[in-house]
Length: 107
Figure 1: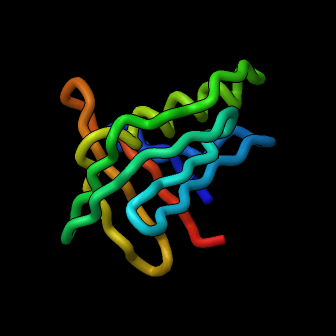
Figure 2: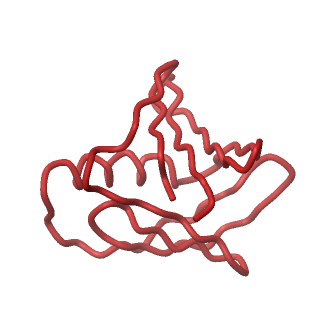
């Protein structure tokens, strides 16, 4: 379950009444992005997950859900660095010179 959004040095909580999650099994990531759902093949290495382009549904949702979806999908593409610490998964990527990321807790 996504519980934090990273933008540069700042970490913020996800908007109230929204929910996003990522499940990775057998080389496939399934994401609930806050609004839509998507799938992508993944390759997991020592400290990197490589996400292939995600196939995603295209519903319109409330503004907070759309903002959460934009944050989630901006991280889940290409090479993403990951760490696992104290039951928390952190995913980080770079976009236009800035660090973007997600924090997730097991659910």
